[in-house]
Structures are given as C-alpha cells and as structure tokens.
Length: 304
Picture 1 (spheres, rainbow, N blue to C red):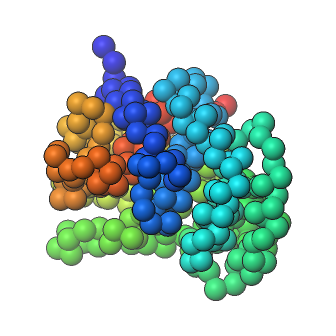
Picture 2: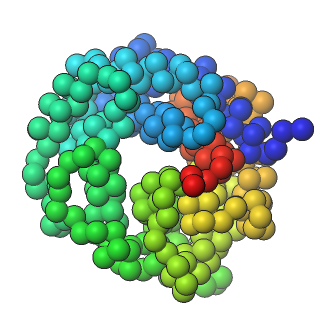
C-alpha cells in the first residue's frame, strides 16, 4: 500500500501534468496578467529543478521538463519577465538560476547582463530579502555583495520571529509564516544542504514551525501546511515522525481531490468544483505544486 506522501505526490503530479497548457504563458489557457503568467512558469521551473536533483526521477514531470526546456529557449519569455517592472530583476535572476542543463545559455547570459547592479546589493533589503537574493544569485553564478548566510541567520525570520501566545490567535501573520518557510528553503536549498542551525537556535526554529503547523491544520491552511512540512524536513527532521507534521500530511490528504488537485490555498479560499478551468487553475495550481514538491522531497533519501 502506498504511503500518504506517495499518494499526495502521484495525485498532484498527475494534475500538474494534465494542466501544463495553463503554465505555458503563451498558450490559450494562460493567465491574462503578465505577473501571474510569469510567476506560474517560474514556479513550475522550480519544481522541475528540485525534482531533477532527487535520486529517483519523477516520470510524471517529463512534460514539465520539456515545457521548461522549450520556454527557456523562447525569446518571448525574457520579454515577458522584463515586462513586469516591479519584478523584472527578481524574475530575471530566478530565470537564470533555474535554467535547465543542456540548453543554449545565450538568453540566460543576456538576461543576467541586464540586471540592475543595485539589485544585487544588500542595500535597502531586509535579512530575509538578502537570503533570498543570495540563494538565487549563487545558484545563477552571479557576483553579488550580500553577506554570508551565517551573518544573516540570527536576524532571519527563523530566529528573529517570536510566536504569539494562544490568546493572540495565529502564532504569526501569514506573511511572517511564509517568510519563515522560504527562509528555510533558501538556507537549506530545499533540502539539499544544512541550513546551519543547531542547539537553542534549532530548537527555537522547530518550536516555531510546530506552532505554525498546528495552526495550519486547525484552520485548513493547506498551502502553508505543505510548506511547513517541507520546512521541518529542511531543518533536519522527518516530519511524519512528529505529531504536527503527521497531522499536516493527513490534512493535505483529506483536502486533495480525486483528480489530484489541492483546490486552493485554504479551505476558505478553495475553488468551487464547477469553476471554469482557468479560474480553478488560478486557485489550485500553487498549492498543488507545493504539495507535489513537499511530497517528492520529504519521501526521498537525504543527500549524503
């Protein structure tokens, strides 16, 4: 009998593979806004990138692999990314960092050459933003002036944030909670390396994550629950060996539809079953993709 993570992974990957036309920003099924179109394809590229490093290839991602390979050679994609002024540098850097192996890198080099040098500086950025920038710049091989992770870690969301007491409701705001998960992802390269926490610092981070996990399960915050399960894995533990981690996986299993989709970021934001395909995709794709990523990484052996 397959494990809960295997069922989550198989279902989510199957749904993603069946909806690749919605990820293609130049297809008829693509989202209309430039920012949304760019974000969806970059997230698909992140899933492909992380899955490609696992010991066991995910055969269901063959279509995504082909789509990303095609789009990263299409001159229209850099134009689309550059056409979102607020995110142009960030999207360009991520585009370069997630370029698949074996492609002609001329477009990637051209995108990197257009990055604003000020963007690659720590000036005006929070510790969290600096960690994110360093993660993608290092992955893309781009020179930058961001401090080492060890200097940023004490001021990062993982260690600087303090959970609110039970009487205060949620342990953190949703933006703060996502800053915690993303910080762990960048520091630990989505489970590939140690994020550098030990002793009291690790204990604090794990306690914060567990508080957030219980809150996510209680309120059916599916997207955050999936990210927190992966965060606990990045922090060096098996999430399913912990009560909040196991409860979060059970929560995701209950939320997953028979077609494999997670229908929204939360129960409160779920798409109606009769929603048009484009609307359903907009609400479902991110949480389904994050669930697939979490299930793939957590169920795979840790790098030696």
